[in-house]
Amino acid sequence: MKISTHLVSAPLHTPFVTALRTATHADSLLVEISDGELSGWGEAPQVWKVTGESLAGAQACVAGPIAAALDGIGPDDLTEALRRVQNAAVGNFGAKGAVDVALHDLAARRRGQTLHGFLGSTVDTVPTDVTLSAGDADALAAAARDRVADGFDVLKVKVGTGDAAADVARVRRIREAVGPGPRLRLDANQGWTRRGAVNAIRALEDCDLELVEQPVPADDLEGMAWVTDRVSTPILADESVYGVRDLVAVIRHGAADMVNVKLAKCGGLGPARTLLELAREHGIRSIVGSMMEGPVGVGAAAALVSAYPTSAVNDLDAAWWLKESPVVGGIRYDGALIHLPAAPGLGVTGLTV
Ligand SMILES: [Mg+2]
Image (cartoon, rainbow, N blue to C red; front, side):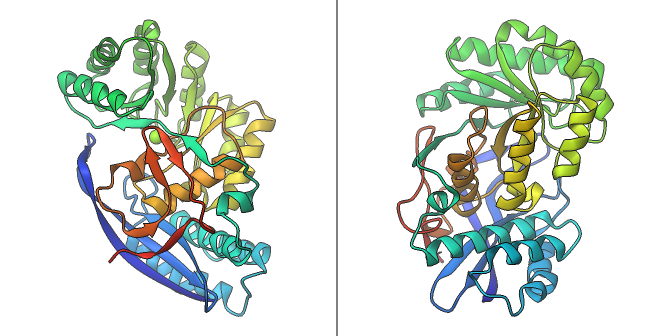
């Protein structure tokens, strides 16, 4: 097998604004694994602010220890290849996830199957939420109405960027703008204190929140358990859970009701399946999310959830924001529905540039 990497930068149709930055492009590293005839694809996103991983680091990890670990192994020895990828380096979940997906994609193509079919799915569409770009209350209310008009009925709002009282006012304004129909979920990205979280969530109980994601810092599992015990809104662990050991710790602490599984946090489809099974066995509800990824990374996550259903609508809107795709083929959005490709693997046949 030949492993190569491609750095791509895809423009967004609408700038994606968070408290930390304004993104106009999605930059990522695409991994291509060829058997000499067919290619499998995977994607590692740039995630300085969550995992601390960069495209340069992912590229070095793929070209270095992962390529060395796969040396001499054949494309049909999938289980052994996946094991070697996970053991090739500490951390580097983005790089491992990209190679894990590319190996799955190649294996599916070699059998003439779609990736989701290869994983066991019998459905071809999965719904997603959409995240509202940050802004003041007026801008958020307008964006919320626009996204509902685009066909989305689950809206994710970023909070936790400063004043919890201002967060409450913004969310209230969004609920007024869209009415009672659409589901609202919040993501505090570790930005609240435990007391601030309880106060804000209780103050929003009449807004019918679906869930609140990562209210307190990732390593404060006691704080998150404290919050989870004091509110009726479900609490979703995101930055607190990368791999299986983290989910075990969340379960032991009773820290959350739900977990957000992402390929770039856990290292690919293999570890993600384990996380989803573990969560189900312990009564932890789940969603699958993504980083700022394109049709390759989001397509793999969508294939996963089509075969391993989660408990709530998944957070897979990242590729919706792209004005131009860096690849030919792959998933397609129709409002909130992601259509999985009918072509083999991820349905991706090459780069557009
Ligand atoms: Mg999150």
